[in-house]
Image 1 (cartoon, one colour):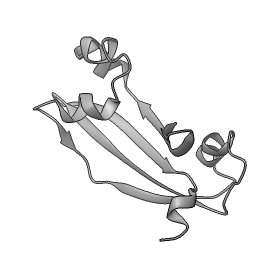
Image 2 (tube, helix red, strand yellow):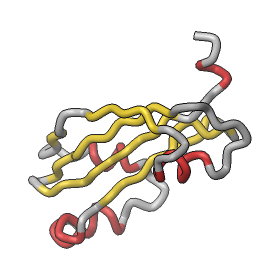
Image 3 (cartoon, helix red, strand yellow):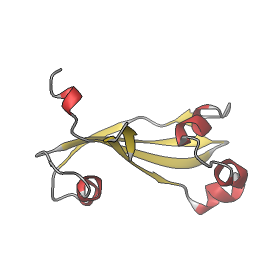
Image 4 (spheres, one colour):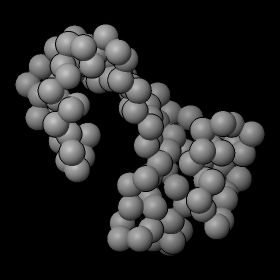
Amino acid sequence: LLCDGETPEIYARTIIPQSTYQVLPSRFDNLGIKPLGQILFDEPSLSRSDIQVAQLTPQHWLYQLATETLDICPDVLWARRSCFYLKGQPVLVCEIFLPSEKWSHV
């Protein structure tokens, strides 16, 4: 979960294939508390696939994972995903945008 203070804003899920890890183990072993985005965007060889966008309903397994700690669950959640390539190696990043009071007034 990515939070604004105590408020969860984004549920993120990253898939790093074993083949990617084997080529770049130090990138991930030394991540510590650094945001993954910092590692990705600091990489000079970075390229990114097109962004895919979806609406997730309560029946979708990712919706269920993203909302299991929330008090209020909306009818749908918006999500996006894309594949980042580090030295040609894929890393899949999926972000699900959680309901937030600050966005309800926009």
